[in-house]
Image (cartoon, rainbow, N blue to C red; front, side, top):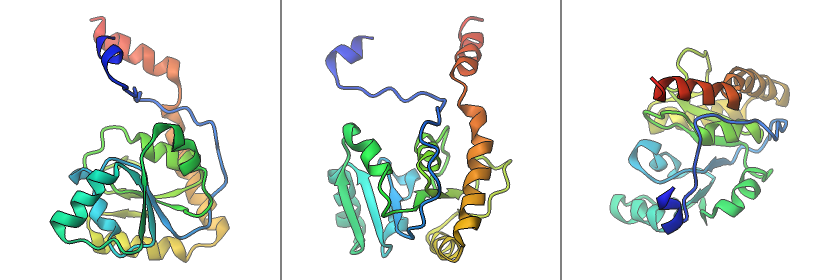
Length: 185
């Protein structure tokens, strides 16, 4: 692993092990824990009561170059050592997980694990029927309103359903075998 000797690199696997299994958080504040790249749609947070856990320099670019205000958004500098602490907060309960062309969605799995109900993009896990999806800012805002109207029991039901469905991606041994089949051909 020559790059690991030169740089501080975080390896993110294409499997997820659920370890927290927290009950649903009832806060209507939105959380965003991702890189600020176009396909992650950070601009959806403009005007939304939200917390962002990302590179602050990258986030400022969106404000400066796209004239977005983000007046209701509090930004926290990403630091891997604070990841658990960010997800473990009880003052945000809706996850901005509306990412275009997301190949795996590690932060989506984390959100589910920590009891955050995600708003997903239409194409992520499209074979699973899930009502809180959006393609644009208007739909995203509508989904926040829809989630905010749910009872705790309803939110927990949606969270449990999606989390249980996603558990098929938490078997590390199975994913290692699948990768070995591909690379050892």
